[in-house]
Image (cartoon, rainbow, N blue to C red):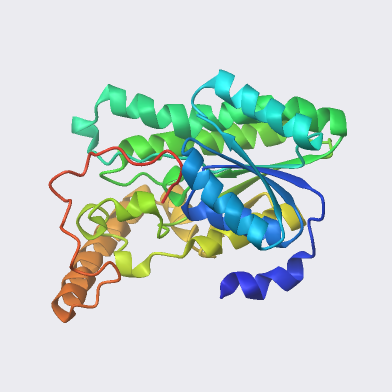
Length: 307
C-alpha cells in the first residue's frame, strides 16, 4: 500500500492536534486514521455523528485518541462551536485539514443557482469559516498548518462539473491568497490537488457516463490523498497533485487552452471506449450489480467527502 511506503518518511505527529473536516468517510476518514497511527490527537468533524463515532472507535481500538465534533461547516456558528470544543479539550489546533465537500453534476446551461450555492457553502465557505475560526489559535501558538483539499478540477474546468469546478477554483485562489498573507510567519498553508478518488461521493454517480475522461477503473484509493496530506504537513509543501504529474494538463491549458480542450475531448473518447470494453468483460471496479444512476445525476451528495 502506498501509505505504508510513505509512512517511514513522515516520522511521528506525537501529541499534535489535527482537526479534519469531512472525517466520516473517504479521504477524511483515511486521513484521520493515518494521523492517529502517527501519534496525533484527531478531532473528527462532519455532520453525521454516528459515522464519526465509528471512525473514532477505529482510532480508539488502535490505541489512538479521537474527539467527535459534529459540525456543519457551512454554518459559521457550528464551526466556531466545534473549534471551541477542540480548544477546551486539547488546548489548540496544530493542523487543520479542510476536506469537506459536495458535488452536484450539471452542465452550466442547466446549473441551478441553489445547487451552486449549496456547493459554494460547503466547498468554499466551509473552508473559509473553519480557517477563520482556527487561525487566531494558530497565531497565538506561533505555529500551525492549514491544508486545503482542492481538486484538479480547481485548475481546469470540465463538464458536467462546471459548478463544482467553480467552487474548487475559488478554494485554490483563497488558499494562495492566505499563503501570501501569512508569508514570513511560522504558519504554513498547503494545497492537495487530487484527481478522482474512490469515495462515497463519486460512488453515488454513474461516473463512466458523467466523467468519461476519467473512467472509474482509474480511480485512486483515499489513502493516496491521505499520504499527500501527510507529506504537505511534514515537509511544508505548497502544493501537491495526486497522482504526481497529473497537473501537467494545467500547464498545457495555461499555454494553449485550445490544445487542452482537444486533449480533454480525446480523453473523453478514450474513456468511453475503455468503459465499454470493461463493461463487456464484466470487469468494472464498481461491478454491474448496482443500477445505473445516469438518469438522476443531479442528486446531492454527502457534504462529508469529495471525489
